[in-house]
Length: 429
Image (cartoon, rainbow, N blue to C red; front, side):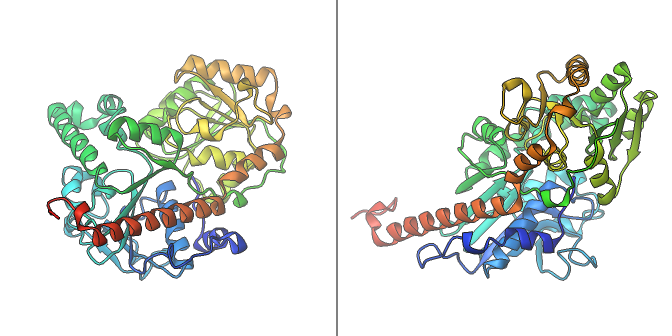
């Protein structure tokens, strides 16, 4: 997964004449706080890209936000987009290995995020995949949360997480289950604190409705499609790119390619790498972590991009389509928003979605794709044009509009409460 430079984000988010014209009524407040779970060199994925895009958008509107996070390991790092920025942090910042291994303090993170004092802000925007939405705000403050996912391992993927957990294998299963039970309760409770929820996909919006009982607006995250080339010749290899963690199910992809004897390159690193290297057959090569330039070159030349994970959105498949590469992926989750499946009769299809998260289902999809030589039939330019709709300026336009609408409604609500005491609970008129 690639991350845009700050200059690219600034260029993309600047919408010129398309930008909404602010009136007195919908002008954004001066004091805005942007909350993220953590800023560390270890975390540079899609969630961080969204935070940077929001920060750039607000800064370009003359409203550079105060940043807040559980921990900050970036503002002191030369070359970081956060270099020299003021960032509010929680007490976890001062704990041993709090910055480098914050996940080890998982049981403390809900209470830690509540210690952030955001009382000076008029508008709070949180970027949430774990606890950021749990910050405390007053009725006079508007809280908008961009949700990347409700906590996967506390809800529908808990059993898969426990099955692979080293702590469970060490006999700590009952303790872990109790902690996840408490996290689910806190997660559902704090969802009620947020004034306006934004989901990164329709799938995430469905999970929000299921687990939190709330409705969410859908705004897809920004993808830097301009970074990728789509005009090169397709070569005889398939590509799988992601973090090598259990829920990405790279093991299923490797086994399917072992059976078919097709060439597969796997890019990425993580705790599953040693297991996958032992599993890989002679036609499967694990390349480990690669530079952005190397990833761009591989995406531009691969026959197809293969992905078996259940993703809330999935930026890497969109990046592959920006490179003109067809996507062969599990047909659930966020990829239903991003991949136009050839089986569904879509005009100008961009890939092939297989129905089950199994080796057999992946193998059948690959065989069907290879037998029909679909990479010759799917036009790279059409695939690239489809990916264009996820450009950062589309995100910037929709996000700005959503924030302005929510702020206007919040102002109107506050004005009603101030002018009509009879509508305020506990007062008699």
